[in-house]
Image (cartoon, rainbow, N blue to C red; front, side, top):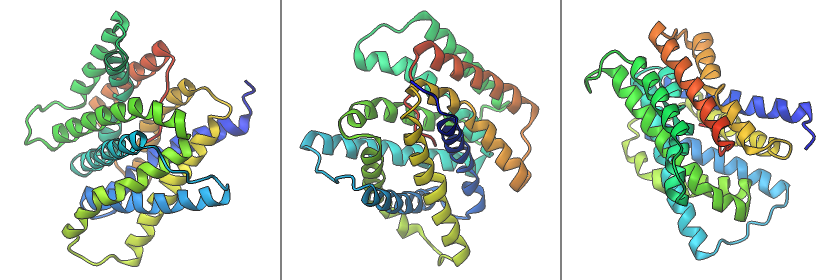
Length: 290
């Protein structure tokens, strides 16, 4: 398999954009549910545009696949809801680092789905990862914003792990582009009730940010990621996923001057190391970005 530098650049750019998505949780003064609704709305529209350009057939799914896609749309919606809520109550770095436990969750949960043994190495990696999670916050009370943020981030990572495992069969049958499009499309009605909580009119500035999040930082990022898979095995994309919290923290520092604390850096190094080890250990990817 020839590894063209252009595809390496595309993969790196995709992860860079995924890392920047959390920034919109701070920039946009709306509930997480509103942010996610407009994210999937503009993302689905953009993906549909590219599907038509590429002349990909929007062939109907069989009944079983239809139910699977609805289920994964629920996981996707609540994965993003918990992630953006984590950003809202804590920091971008904390949200991304705690979410980055997802490869560890995959290594633990996947054997349960496919009835294989959980290896001792995976248990050790999980223990290391959650040691990092505990270091992220010094307070373990639900009244602590930092603890809430880490807890929500870990839940987001768990939901993403479940989404990744369920996605394997659907992606194999229908391809990554169509699967991503339908999941974002089906997420729209799931999140639509959140519009009842929209208590102010959208400004042109807010609309611009919603479009930017849904197009460049979601749809385009996914397209770059999917295209990179032509040249790279799935587990390589998983390795690159460990850069996402680093890019996210860089975005936060440069744009909103959010500086991670020492224990965030220390806990983050432990989590990223454990996530990297989990991906190498299992030789699996399944990454689709935040």
